[in-house]
Image (cartoon, rainbow, N blue to C red; front, side, top):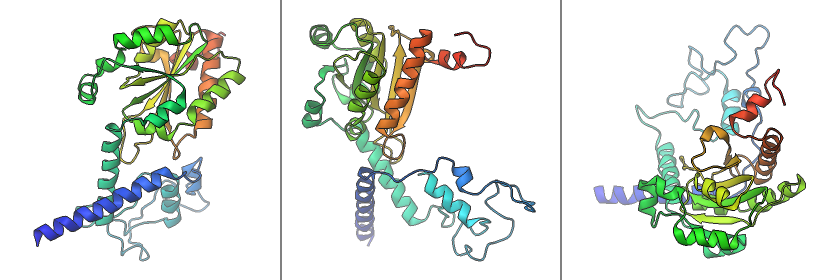
Length: 312
């Protein structure tokens, strides 16, 4: 009996995993720009309750059959929030536990995250980039995960290849990498042409793209210094959360330097169909680089430059 139940649970988990993976490949629908406004949280005349209050002190007979959310005050508000966010909102409970369907979805999303970390780029994807292909000093996945510093430095063969094949002295050197999800880099492949298009339109010269296997963010510092680039822009897979194995981050550094502090860099995260589109991410990256070019610095300095009373 126990074996049959375990087999059935495994089958259900496998179904959910397949469903989650299939959904992640489809383009996400429009996301509300203001979930609070979409949920109708603005105070209403004669409404004595807090405008943020989703739950009341008395049961709602229309939702009393849903364990854990029997006192829902505004059904439309919760529905609007669930449309505006992938977070698990109003899922209810079964005693002290999640309902079965929610639990299975959590297991499926966890599987997506684990698969993303161990994913490898396909040869077809790498060939499509037309990039100089390099490697960090992390010789295998276990080393990469357990010794982050190894992913921040190129191996010696890659240093020589970089000097021989890459573009020197470009305004912006674009670098792509697996990071903690090669799957994310591959799923957002449209980011590279979007960046090249936006950078060229803004008057930046762009070096031949570079791909780095098992790379951490700081490998861009070494590449920027070696090539004498004015700025580096590295796009790599983020550390996956539940079901977010396709999420990419862009890190920008003006005047790259070995050991450059993260406070001198800018980041655009959540580049994925359910977050920032590749086109919007490319536009925002160019906005940041143009500001950096104006003041000669990046990172927190950009915010300081926009502060009232600041000098150009």
